[in-house]
Length: 172
Image (cartoon, rainbow, N blue to C red; front, side, top):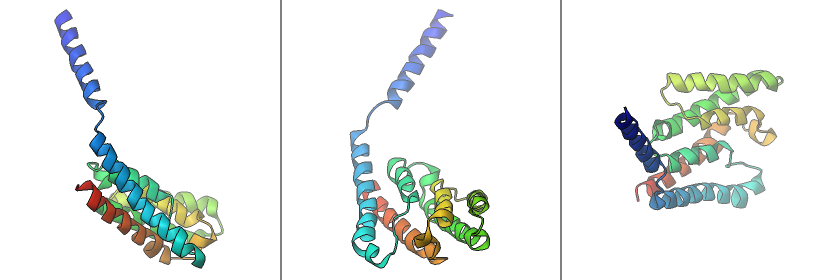
């Protein structure tokens, strides 16, 4: 009995030790990749597009960066999920805004809930996509005035920039 407890204790201790090991190289490239990917989007947004009252930076890109640079092995961080998750959610969000724009209190939860189901059906679940759907509904006039253009810019353009940076830095 004591031997079994000791063996279990050692296994648990080893698993906890292994989980807490710090991989400095992985952390370094995660930092550099996310910094460059979001940095390019921020630079384009604030230096080139803000003078035309255009938006390229949306909040869900921060959450996508956590997945595609910090947890690259996750099924939620794969390219198909990244692209389809954001695109599906953007289309759903814009559609619900167009249909129920006067009633944001119902359009916002419907957009997020429907985008979850649509991503599940497409087998492309990407959690930041839910935020993209919410932003499409509640993003203010600079976002909602874009209509379906929101799908192309900022969503597809921004996701493509993040993806290219991820290809470069995750493969180093």
